[in-house]
Image (cartoon, rainbow, N blue to C red; front, side, top):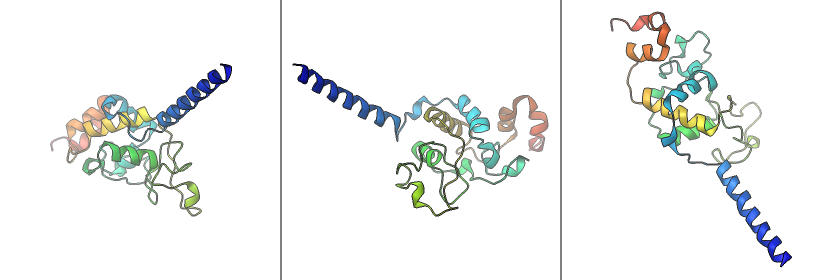
Length: 175
């Protein structure tokens, strides 16, 4: 009886551990749970996306004096939510797009590669770590305010900058 109980407990524990491991690496989160307003905070502060992609996501980082690179034009991306999530988690090796999942390249979850697969100096760029929920929020923000929106305009600029719109968005006035 005790052996049967131990066996049952061992099996239950094994199933629990396996379930938790799968939950910890969820390659397909629920994108319907994203909060665009929280995603704006991720874009601006947590991921520092604005430094390379610019406030409008058009890749014109030169508008931000603190920027150091020009990122892709998010407004024109053809990536779906899963594609965006994969890029956020894994970055794009060979580019300045950083990865934001702390487990990326420790195992083969990103493009089937680990850090050992890269030559010294050619490793993917590491960005600030984001939780899955933050990535989902960021994707919701990008989809609501950037992707497919064409060229940025005054209204979008004012929405982004809020109280400092008069100064920050002066270039858009009268357009």
